[in-house]
Length: 290
View 1 (cartoon, rainbow, N blue to C red):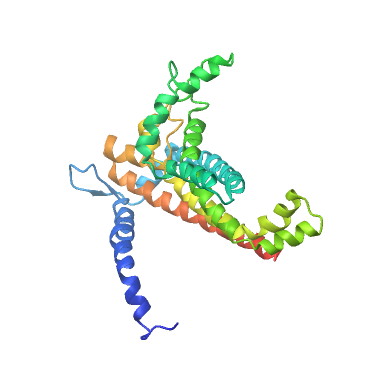
View 2 (cartoon, rainbow, N blue to C red; view 1 turned 45 degrees about the vertical axis):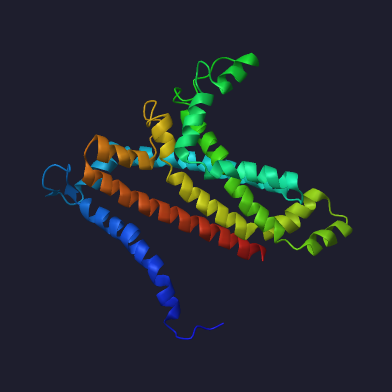
């Protein structure tokens, strides 16, 4: 159906465009501008050019924040997608009970991050937490889940996977329901096993859904903040200082607005680059298999 006037679609996009301009593009441009200044929110900004970027690079703060966030994101994206797909395959069937289980799993996604973080602080308490008690009951040693620099980041990743796996499950379930049943039945009649049907029929048709889930999960994992702020505050020994938390520290703890703005610009460019690379990779794979 064609619009009555050629400009009608643009008028319909205007409210969304205005919101993006006010709450996304303008703050981003302003951050790029402020990144050229040294400013502590108390005195007048002083122009320093690209000194903030140079200090971040020379100090290793950018590299540390990026590698920490990347490690976190790899675990979260792989874990949440794998768990979501398994749950979708197990629960993609009619009936009230599968629907109830799907709703129960998805409910974790709609709960606030702060509530989830507080819940898991209790579960992971090193002295009386449920997880610690379970490990001790099995004869294992007590584990300081959030106090050990070697596992704290991956503990936060597991908490994040627990929260967002329902999101992946719902999207994969929708993708599975779009797979034509006639193709599955034809493959079964040809003698294909369940694994062969999934690998050769279902999985190729799920690639667009997989690309979308992977991209949105990557963006979500790179933007993690609340769970870090509540559970570890970037520690121990900065092992969980991800990008967004590093920006928070620069502004609200160190009063280095210019340096924080420089991190915002770098963070945006990195996230944009990773997203484009990921989408390009999925598209090339889809074309190669077409």
